[in-house]
Length: 271
Image (cartoon, rainbow, N blue to C red; front, side):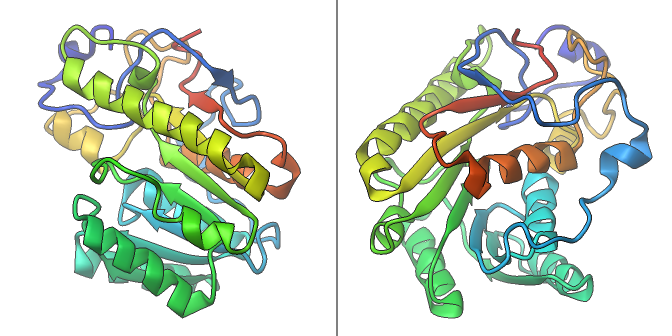
C-alpha cells in the first residue's frame, strides 16, 4: 500500500484497501479503461433480465461494495437476500431496492457467529425456495470450516460462490502480516472448495479489490480520503459499482467454465 499514510491516519485493514504485487487472474471486463467522471463511476447498471429468477445471497451489504452489488443484482432481475449487523440501515437499503423496482430482503446477522450465518442461509432458502449465487463479502470472516451455502447448492447441482479476498491474499505486507495470512487462507479455501465442488456444478471464485471508496476505507482515513490512490496506475480509487460489475460478470451463466480463480480488480496496481 505504497504511500497510503501520506494522506491520513491508517487505523486497520479491510478487504479492499491494499495495493501490492501478485495476481492469479485478471478480469478484463470492468470499467478501468481511462478515468471516468464521478457520475459515470457511481452510475448503476440499467435494469435487465440477466439474473431473472436467480436467488442471490450477500453478506455485508448494508454499505460499500456489498450494497452496490445487491443493487446491481436486483437491477438484473435477481431476488436478493442480504445481511449485515446494522438493522435500520439494512432495512433502509432493502426498501430502497424495492422502491426502484427490485426484489430484496434484509436479515440482521453477524458473520463472526457461525450459528447466525447458518440461520441466515436457511432463511434465504425459506424465503425464496433455494439459492443460486452467494457473495461472501463481509469484511470479517466466520470461523474456519466449510462454506455454509454449499449443501444447499449441492442439492440442486448448481451454484456460484464468490468470496471477497484482497490483493493481500496473493501478496504480502510488512505491516499487516496477520491480515495478509488470513486473506491467503480465504484464497486457499476458495480453491479447495472449487476443486471439491466442480463435479457438482458449483463454481467457487474469489475477487480481490484494490482501494475502493467505501465507508470502511473512509473511516480508516478519518474521512480524509484522497481522490487518487498513491501507487495506483489509474491515479484514483475504485468505486463500489465497479467492483459490483466484476462480481456480476463472474456470476453470469456464460462464465460456466471459470472456477477456482482469484480475480484482481485493482486498476493494474499488482501487474
